[in-house]
Length: 232
Image 1: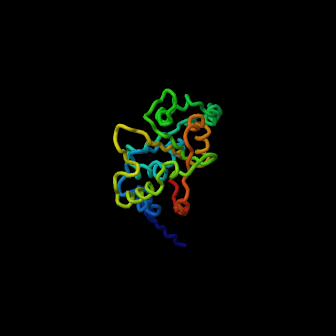
Image 2: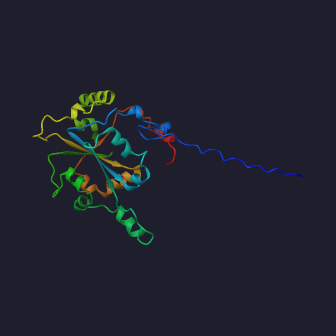
Image 3: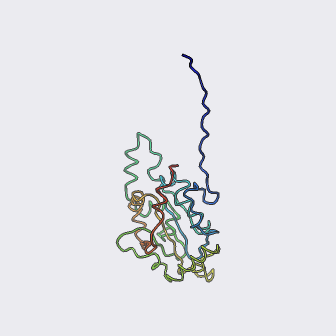
């Protein structure tokens, strides 16, 4: 019996091609839904409070990278909530208890001074801003209602997204001397479980903000895209 030995060449590694615009795999590219230039908001700011697990796991696919493609750096800030991160085996129990504990206003301000300023808490003054927090529940109103001028805001945002305008006109300032009417939208970023933990942890501070929800946006393509997303 003659045994013929054959050296098989390894198959070339399959590479995923990344979109140069959104840096996501081409199969889940979202560039067609993005404005051609990041939008600049004049009378409102977006403040994203992100669970640390969301920040650690979703460096490309998560909310943070997408919101930076939609809004310029002067319009959005992302704060990572580090409570409960980096716990070793010995202090895991105490870290878990700390992560689920509700903080008072002073503790939240100490952790996130910028969030405290946006909420207008004592010791953290900020020019007149109306805080809104995106989280469903009792007392929540549609975001468009909280912003006012529903049609104007929606139409100008759509025009800006299509034309690549650098400024959303419905949010533009009339002048530098008066900050009345300016708003800050606080978004809790993470899975539903993580977002609920953020809400419970910082509820004492966030309770002063008007709760808002997004309604009437039609069918979302996110679920279909999410099913195709590869694990990173």
